[in-house]
Length: 409
Length: 141
Image (cartoon, rainbow over all chains, first blue to last red; front, side, top):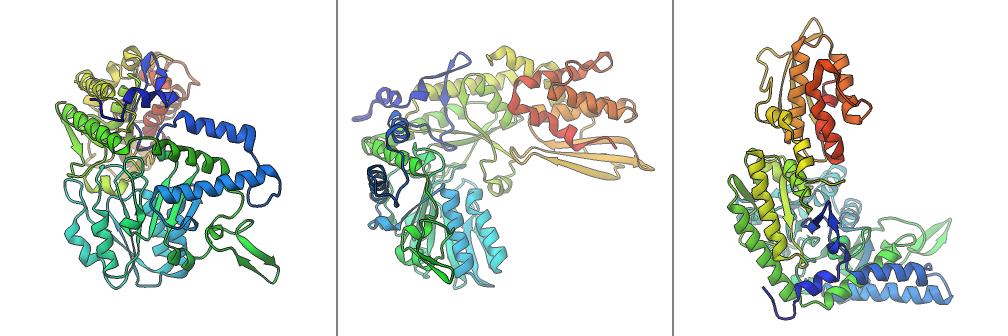
């Protein structure tokens, strides 16, 4: 299908890796929820940075440093604009969504959480939004509470009001599930929390690659995502938070670049965003992330999303025709993530078999062990689609799954 | 390396497919005296051995698992061979199994040719951990 303003062949040509072969087969990359591929413009931005622009930032008076500081801070504004944030100083660069969540959880442990308080998460969280809160609960004496998930993989909305109470200090949940594909009703959940004056941390790792997000409209208090899932480099991520909240939290790490004045008698810290960016940051990562966002701005994202939804629809229909196959996660609102199991066949064997045809999928627990355990799985196979995947690739996946079903009998 | 259907056949050769479909000594051993569990945190594969010891000496064992074909077949082959002589020469068998998986041994020798199927797994590095799980769990005394 051809969409206006969306030429799949032209888009694929922007991603050099998509042209490679694996063992005589064209690469069919369907592991985008794990990490996305990078367009040539990101690769080129990194090359140019190292070849022509490298210097340290925020501390030089020479041309390279001044120029790069400007580019670094421009990227911060670009990120703010990309997620609908009004104040660029509320954008903190981290190593990824995991570090962003750790920063918040650690800050809450030190400044906010007390014995008897509650932290609310959901049963479909990635380990990155479970473990930091478990540790926060252990250290502070708070309790970790969990919103259940229904059989189709959607959140049990009826259970939420009772779980948000006067002891709840934060509600941290995933916008789009990396395992189920479920898109949670974020606006409604945030309103419910705010009606009880509870701040919300939204894990946006799996939504930013698919849809345009506006944190001002969502009105969440914290929003986190990783650059590498957004077609940018690894090792760079974003924490956005409302100024009032970021100012309440203590520094996460300390050292150079986050201070105003250091004396052996005492040290004063910078304001936002510097307070949370100790040491030389991942400048190359920031430059690469900026290039990825620029790339996405040049794309008709509505058309790209429609294309992804078509891929999901065709893949779902095709895979359901495979005997013994069932899909895990059938919520009405889904991103292009497809987890499946085949009776009598372990996901690892599925993954190895598909790999022989050049098809890359994920097999395992997807860092959501509590979710899988709840549904009685140790692992699932997962195909996740990006806008650069084609219908031919979906057909290749479906044909290969039929073939492996026959192979294992 | 070309990973075509032929090398897949080599990985999932008849021995492994057979052990996967009809695992030997599978289930809970009624008279077990202890259990031992192996777990691969990377993929969630889990294997449980039910052991019967008499005066400290291992005499019988069964297993259960929630795991892939490679892991299950490897555990089944291990027990089939070990139970042939009630674990009397388990130390040697164990060394041979691991030797085949890490490549320090090229074949299993005449006595236990069934184990040669494990050698094929070496061309799939990401799957060696699957085959090793049972062997790493049930170590010789």
